[in-house]
Image (tube, rainbow, N blue to C red; front, side):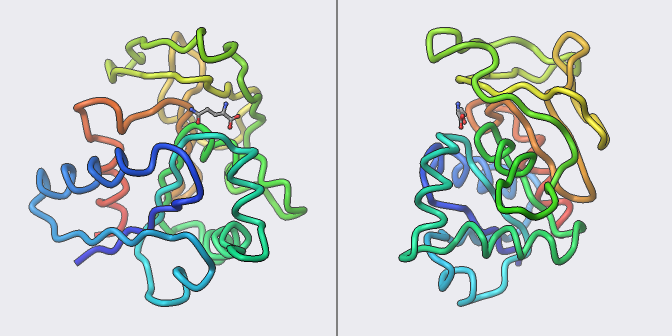
Amino acid sequence: MVTIGIAMLQGARHAHIDAIHRAASEMSLDVETVELRTIEDLQKQPIDGLMLPGGESTVMRLRGNDEASQLLPALFAWMREDEARPVLATCAGAILLADPQDGGVPLVDADIDRNAYGGQVDSFESALDCGFPGIFIRAPRFGEVRDEVVCTLSGEAVGVRRGNRLALTFHPELSEDSRYHRMLLEACA
Ligand code: GLN
């Protein structure tokens, strides 16, 4: 049994829960998803992997640092304990990894620019260079990347990996292809 914690601070949470269960059934793997809202949710039971959804990073920072939650610093601490801990972070989640803004070292080593393709109306779908259907919603854009680039759009990094942490600027949970969620589960299994 693999246990995946989902940061429920804000954003595209439920689509990721569905995508994780779909990926697990493709792999014939037993998976349990745990919804994380507060530091206590993380302390209650150990997780094997972590999912950081997209949404609005500013809202996630506010909610996650709130006295009532304190989830965000706890998640950063969990990740920093070991870079082999599996993490899948998408869009706003990727912003949090590249730019944690907590005075600690970034979780992936890459520059990142919020809303760099424009606003909501500039959201777009475009096949990545690997063929994966990339769905970009008010997406951030990587600048200089000092970790491994794992996927590109017209040659530009849209996925960065450090250890078992994967930061994607697009929304894999909105496509039928569950390869990135399977990668998270494979790293846990
Ligand atoms: N624009 C959002 C941010 O700055 C990210 C968009 C997304 O996660 N779809 O956090």
